Amino acid sequence: MKEKWSYSESVESSEIVNLESKYGHFIDGAFVSPKSKKYFETLSPSTEEVLSKVSFGGKADVDYAVNAAKEGFKTWKKVKPVDRSKYLFKIARLIQERSREFAVLESMDGGKPIKESRDVDLPQVAANFFYFAGWADKIELSWGNNNLKPYGVAGQIIPWNFPLLMLAWKVAPALATGNSVVLKPAETTPLTALLFSEICVEAGLPPGVFNLVTGNGETGSYLVNHDDVNKIAFTGSTNVGKQIQSSLAGTEKGLTLELGGKAANIVYEDAAIDQAVEGVVNGIFFNQGHVCCAGSRLLVQESIEDEFIAKLERRMQQLRVGNPLDKNTDIGAINSKQQLEKITDLVHSGVNEGGTIFQTECELPGNGFWFKPTLFTKVQPAYRIAREEIFGPVLTTISFRTPEEAVEIANNTEYGLSAGIWSEKGSKILWTADKLDAGVVWSNTFNKFDPASPFGGYKESGFGREGGRHGLLSYLKESR
Image 1 (cartoon, rainbow, N blue to C red):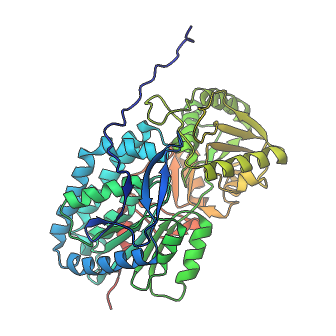
Image 2: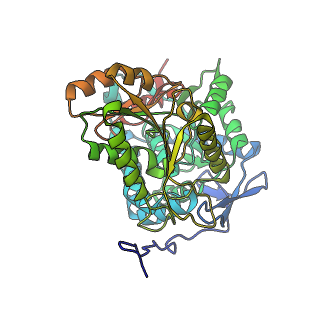
């Protein structure tokens, strides 16, 4: 007998996706076999099934891609800005036309729920290409400077949490400003980037303007240190970002880093509690917590802590964990076994250090990588779970008494990427936001993005901005 309010499955068909048994790199306008003659498997994190084999990019492959990008840049910089915008508009429209295919593949390869891939990621991807297409013929107007010019060859390395969206954040402004691109997607989620390569062919993008080399960190290192790469844009872990910055020290290469975060979501006693509960849930459990700007530290005012936590636990229990292609799913699969082990280790440390743990009662699938939505209370700021980026569906709670104390706790981190504030008093929101060390501050909402709004952090969350006209500057330099 079915329980009351049980759900029937509503699984999105995967038949719309036609996967090749193996993929080459995309270089100079065509797919090519790897010079390394090596391939690696990419898995579905929800089933552990092999989806395809992907080329491993060695030094020779990166050389080939960069040389193609050098030639592509010679062609691309001669294209009139108004015509560059037409290419980007075409890419945006093609992404919209094939958005269902992209969304299903993103969920298969990355483990995120289809409703997030379909309703959040893909609309944002297309919107970014539309937005920067509009800027392509207005670069001189963007900052009132006639001396800005493209770097040349831009090497771009993107993470596994938002594979296609991070591609759009980087590729769209790079092409709009006249650069050519060599992109390296994350080794666990390369498939939507490979599908995007087909879009570039369909849009008629000149050969060499966009190139893609798949591989692991070794491949990324070859790209970062290549003499003919003029600009590096990296999104990923703080440790790797530091290594890249060290490698490029003393060179003339441009560099943009978007790194980790440990965002504070501050809930004041005058907040609309039910609305704040929804915002906190969205802030940490969206995309399984695989979000650099996730609101992973809940700072709640002491006077409402008990009421807020009780409502939060009830709301968490309603979250559905399971098949990413099921439209009912709220929490999908953890991206990889390695990431699951990291999350598990940090959660164990939180218990051992004295935190009180709450996990939802749910049955996890037998295959794949899964973790229950988790809440810690009675947490001290010195605990590892309050300091280190967990990058999973784990929320830590710290109480505060005064706004001054909330700001002090929120800023007590090496990161400075984002924050959230919940209050019905505008003056309190503005006072708090002004004192937070965060690149992005949301008020009475969380995880809201727009292509016209710049995104980036301070401290060890990186430097440079993506999105908005500020994002154009990441791919432009003063002509000499």
